[in-house]
Image (cartoon, one colour):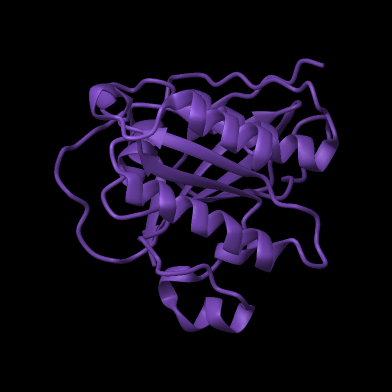
Length: 227
């Protein structure tokens, strides 16, 4: 089944939009981006939303909420992409989530993008731990939440610390998660990874296992809120 999607960044109110004559905006897709310090989470998000890249380190420990939109199966959906700082652990309860302002909204995400630096072993260990904590706290009593593992800094391939096929086999065969490698610096596979993330959400919601997603790489300004 072909499932086209056109992504655009918006500024202004969300309104009630939709296709098929309903005029009702479908529920937003909430995407949480997590990873250790310095793996390039913010660079990936900025590249996706604004086609922008900066070598400067990201200051502060605040989460950033970006609002965008995508057309999925003929309906316009809000995208809420939250760029979280490097949190020490995934909150095990709603109380813990809302006690720490950096974690707010993290337990209600529809899909998790866990980013690691292919040149840093510790960043992969962080992803491994975070994935396990998500499974232990989110699966109980609810449907399983899709998780996408992303290896960033592919442009620094010569410094890779774990062979790609080893990581890919572990993630896809053992963890049963999606796996994508990208380079935020050179804009390589950035659109692909967000397409995979949205497809995993779509498959979880609509059971269209063979759904595909296409993005329009003509992005306008998006709304961002520091929380």
